Image (tube, rainbow, N blue to C red; front, side):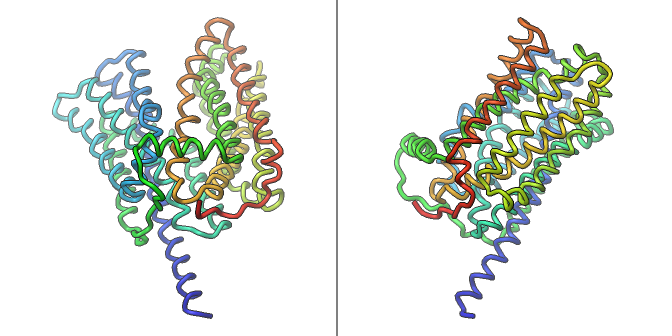
Length: 420
């Protein structure tokens, strides 16, 4: 074995160790995000007597930065550096969230303060999400290990969705909404420390050219649109997130007002069904080895739609069981889908385009979510809750078209692209 081989193996081991720090910090931060999602609106209502409109404004403030700066953020992250961007984002998020309980203790907390904290946190989240999704391929060169790494990242997201709300409710119940935000600020600090422990510090994002920001944004858009698999994944993500935003906006009131389930029973049904997300994430690797990475994306799109159809068809005394089963089936498909979609994006995107391609994908697929929520409300008011739910599933079902397309079915095995 040559010294080059030994050095290569050592670099691979170090890259995997560094990825574990990245994964650990991301996992803690995701749980903290669940605390923030629950504590922020409750802080507005409990401490300040905010209205429902005010709570909606807070929720919009967290997501609005994806529309405002989502595209140029990919260029800025590449210029600043991925690791540096994540560390800075965590530090600023920790301070922004910490300022809320400090203001509460001092008796000067205002609604404007909450909106400002939500906006700052949202802006930093845009930078962090783009950077962390582009960082794993720079730490791990091997395609098979990259899929395993993305499985772990997606598994953390699934477990945060499954366990996070319960943990958040416990923290808020024990400490109160304002004090609970102290816990969220600590999670951002933990994430920042894990990033500081990464030894692979010299990993850059290669920059082929550096022109005006919007020129580089345009290059990112053209790259995504010209790459068939990225274009198909983005199209699938767009209609999927649009429909899911409609579904999530209506499902609670559909279950309580239309199906006459109690909030406790509905919460229990969704919580039990939520186990499907980590199950699907863990199944993704086996399915990929059995059918190929592209075909698996189409295969797992089917249970996504089937699970949502089961929930929408819930009725009478079987409603809670159907919602739970539907959520599990949908979650299993969604967990596997996210893992493979992220891996395909990593494999076909060269390093110098990673942040810009991620920014374009996030802008398009996340930017439609507020639109979906508004559309669902309009359809629900005009035609009823059942029609709104059926419409949401019909929109999600259109993700089958790009997911089952011929280019995706042919992409059984992909080799990582490292250069333009």
